[in-house]
Image 1 (cartoon, rainbow, N blue to C red):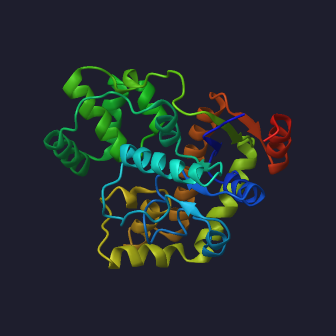
Image 2: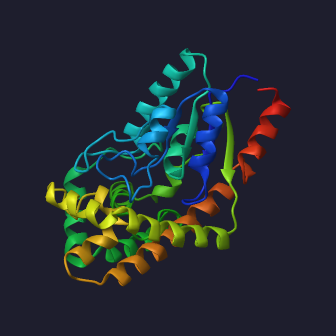
Length: 298
């Protein structure tokens, strides 16, 4: 059976990266990250990037790609990843794609939605509205015109909320209607880590406290000192956007931790629902994948 890649998706804190790493060692191959925040440099603890030790063991791609103030979107991700897949396959290896950013995985498999061209002037106006009235105001507007997409991305995804409103204003059509699922553009073996919500919640709580112990506060301070301001997409990542108010004296550490846990659980729940709707095979350990690969004689 000839395939272009193995995909291991799943919610945050579900163990997918650890499984992918062990599988990459087993298959002597390379890993491509599908995480929208791991692309940013200097953001290591809050994004739970693989350690430098692990990255010496196995070649990881699409990690530390751009600076936190540089623009990065799904189109850039797909174009870069397609080239990396080609390069890995030319070595006679099967690339492993791992991550929980389902919009990246969807675009990679089915192509980008055919929406209107970017309208940067309108986008700037919407950003100004978000800054003045709050992102919640725009999210409520999006819910009235495109509830499907609003629920898919969640209330904190500023970049995608603004883009969806931009498309609706310019076309009169909900952004979700542009996402047409045809036959996949790639041949893949897809898996997702199928933990219960209760298991995920425990993992999320444990990982949040671990990030605090590892120095998440210092990492956030470093980003601010380097001039990477709160309004940028990168600093809207869960973990960073909750810690910044604490650093500025606007909230307590207890409140910051509680908000990180709450927002991470909500995000993991959305991820879990999305992957459960795919045709990917549910797994819990690497043994599940090994058994599947043996049956296919890969």
